[in-house]
Image 1 (cartoon, one colour):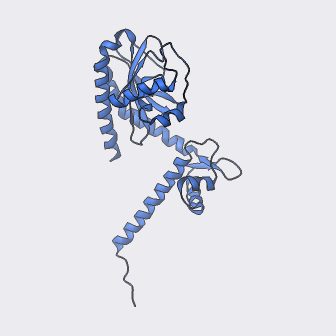
Image 2 (tube, helix red, strand yellow):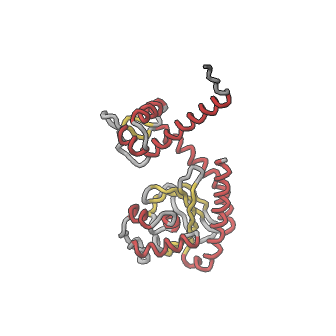
Image 3 (cartoon, helix red, strand yellow):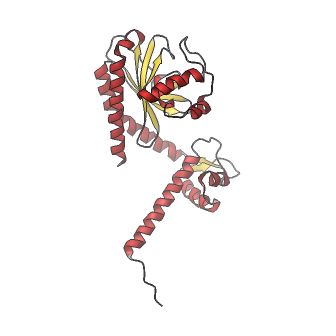
Length: 264
């Protein structure tokens, strides 16, 4: 009895499917290593990603060849490698480049400073800024880290999480930065619920006296959360608040459309 050979097109499709599966598994392994500084053993990785240890071993060996993962200990633990840092730096630059014209336009419309931040654990880090044209304006240093619980952009990010995730990330009690800082989770959750409803979060002199802010959060083209905020001297914030929040939401929608276009 003869068995008909698979058509070439079917063979090609099978090979491509297998290649895509390997890439997906490699990505899952790297995500499993994302939040560990001491690395994981092959067995620990296998448990996290739901793959056989032998499969993990083959993929990790290939990732090590490209320095996407490196040895973390003599006992065989591995962690993310230097190639990841180089690639991540390139992506951050690309993201900031894409966002920059929209930040500039928003600053021109509002005549206020506009900040762009990425999320790093329980803090956010400013990665770009467009300084406003107002004589009295706010300025923060790019690279500076701020807490999530007392900043508009931080609270906008927290609004993307559920209440249990927020408690796990930042706990229940927080340091008072000003007399207006919300220092208990129960107080903060009231603001978070409002941010979920409205699409933006507000800082009412909670991080620094004399400064209020509005902020929004979104995912970039890689699915990482980023946040945009507009800090404003308190004396003119309330009169400008509605316009600031409306323009922030409009900018968020445009950027989300742009990120989805980049992904296609």
